[in-house]
Image (cartoon, rainbow, N blue to C red; front, top):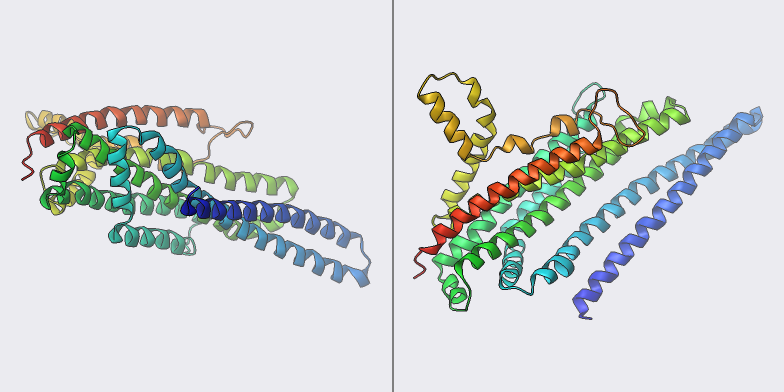
Length: 383
């Protein structure tokens, strides 16, 4: 085994073991705190204060362990995700020419200084926002989740467009593409390989950003609901903890939807990059993102014929990004999971059914956009 691989596995193993040990200690500490709290009610006047103090110390210790346990678990997941890409996905794709191009594209894009800087800014923005009060009536955690998801999407979009321009347009301009095309590789394979590398980049960047949002949401809940947790009984605490867990679970379908949205825009960006510069690519994608999110309002314009028909027809050509926006349901509304029934709320299976349909739409649109990209790149002069 190569030394970098061994180092990676050792780091991942250490973080996972640390997280598992921390959670085991946390469970023991909370159990001990509850026992001491129960004993304090039975203690006499002389010993009651000491028992309560011991219970508070145990509870504070358990909260500290919860804090570090959640952080270590998030770090473990964040370390594991690039490993899955490196040792699983890229290995499976490496047997084909498309996979080889995807591998080079992925590394070229992810190690760009711009990518690293924007990614750090994304994580910092989400982390800082987790401490910002939103001054709502008990909805601060939900507001944070919404803002954090928006940060993850926006920063990932910037990274995606920049990376697309670097690995396609810049390689054409500096004649690097000529070296690649001198090998027995078809142009459509180049387009697919470049796109696959960008998709892997999106997966890593958006995945780690969403993990950071989940961590902030999970820990912030205990701060925002501190009074509710303190006055609640055992059953009330269980319901509050489940509500927190449900909010974290909701980030998973939100991640899948945002991933599909970015992959759709990446296919369009690849098509633009085959012919035009990074500056124009960035401008078009930003305007397209704004316009595509407004297509839901086209039927309400009442422009009169023929303008209304033209507007509707134009909206069909744009990606219907509203399909990927389910935050009002996932962030602000409770949903039913298993035995935890919520009256009037959707079930988790219904949410995943919607996500599946959105993914089908994304795949179909991506296929069309990549077809256009291949047609545009086929006749592109590389000299």
